Length: 69
Image 1 (cartoon, rainbow, N blue to C red):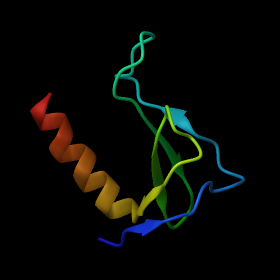
Image 2: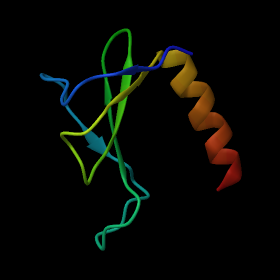
Image 3: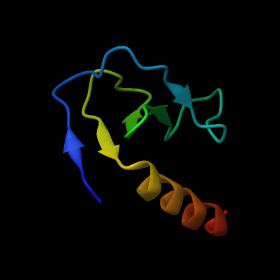
Image 4: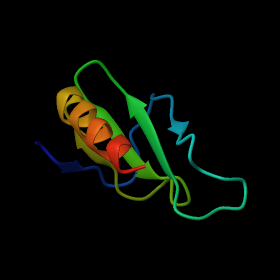
């Protein structure tokens, strides 16, 4: 898995908040998919670091995480 941290923002992406995020805040993530990468950030700190992974790594992560829910 390739992890890259961007300084503040990745521009030109459509970010989507996790469907598990509630209206009262808490631990929330946002995801933006690009053709060759998937970007993940903290929805409360949108100018903070961004984790970037390959689409296959993201698919594997979501598959494993969904088994835990």
